[in-house]
Amino acid sequence: DAGITQSPRYKITETGRQVTLMCHQTWSHSYMFWYRQDLGHGLRLIYYSAAADITDKGEVPDGYVVSRSKTENFPLTLESATRSQTSVYFCASNAGTGDEKLFFGSGTQLSVL
Amino acid sequence: SQQGEEDPQALSIQEGENATMNCSYKTSINNLQWYRQNSGRGLVHLILIRSNEREKHSGRLRVTLDTSKKSSSLLITASRAADTASYFCATASGGSYIPTFGRGTSLIVHP
Image (tube, rainbow over all chains, first blue to last red; front, side, top):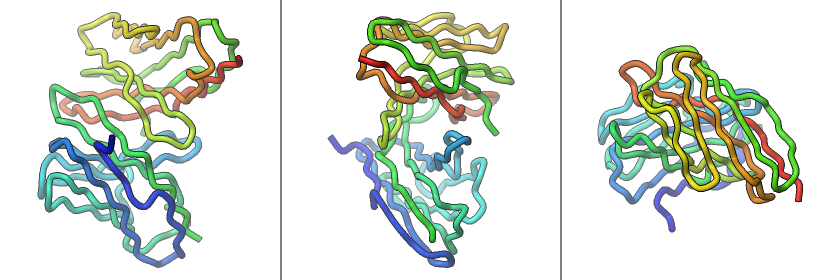
């Protein structure tokens, strides 16, 4: 049951290239989040969005751009990929304050060569 | 920076035993959540406990919260091989309800 889906599942790119990771949710959740997961660091918040056209930085936003023109989509763009951005990226969503349980996608494993 | 830190980093037990994982945090929280992550998958929510609650149960899971010690524990009773996964605590603090995750505890349950 696809409530929140990420694509692609795996991506290999080269340094300097632009790459966009997609996230789509079918629950009409207000909040959407992008985390990256690295060994030794756990999950770190990159960007989040409280509603369409409202986005804000998380802990590690440098080198990333997000947009949210529609409630259901929250793409993450690496403008000029670097090796340090090799990671597993997770998108998540929730209904907002009062219902903070996060629903996660299956992740995108990104390798920057 | 991580707000919550799980302990131990790794835990190996036999099926049928209980597994206890701890989470310590630094600043006052609004709520604390526990998540499970199976290898190669996204995180799955287990339990949310609010700052005014002390204990919650869900099936074989028991979560406690001690705000005076700034710590929480997750107990899995009668563990099964299928409980093998990484477990993360996530806290929301101050005026924010956005979860900040720890580094996780890796649990292996041997059949």
